[in-house]
Image 1 (cartoon, rainbow, N blue to C red):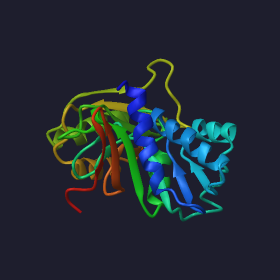
Image 2 (cartoon, rainbow, N blue to C red):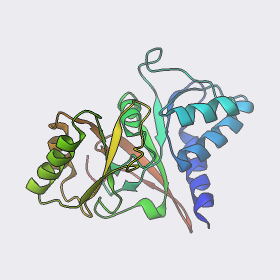
Image 3 (tube, rainbow, N blue to C red):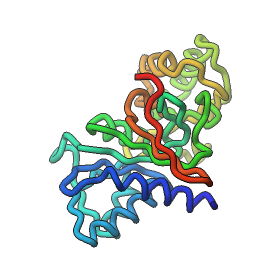
Image 4 (cartoon, helix red, strand yellow):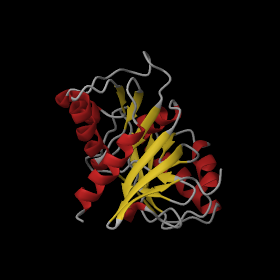
Length: 232
């Protein structure tokens, strides 16, 4: 199967967990967009759901296709979030943020009773870090924040290039922040790195999603497989 077909199959399988009347978080990225398209078909068929989008891009697609939206101010507790991932390991620890929406994605996932990850088999890894780790940062003090990130990582034995997404024309998140992409190569202790990054004042959020995903629906060329955390 081609990559898009795998994404569609994962998204289709995740629809089985969406029930009538649910309040759902809707993720960002190419796989999440396939989920939105399939969800919209169900809505046209009579399924009643209301969604909280994790980005302006997702919100625009939902409006275009007729998926009713709300906000976490109006619905602060959601039943389910369905979102993609850049990497997922056996414990369902994730790297997310390739699409630039990691802060809102994490807020929405944390407000949900469960998070389901949809992805193709190429996103499953033994150890996180092959994909660059996105770190959302405040614009003020960018140089100092980047240096603090480097030093915090090195203390944990993690090293790699840390670049500003977009370079001279920086990518700006929906929240008005910049993103540093850290190519660490291998992250042996995601929890320790998470804590170290959160301790840096200029770091708004990072793309390590730990303990949030309850299930992963992964499409391989020979079928869709369901994953639950190897450890709780």
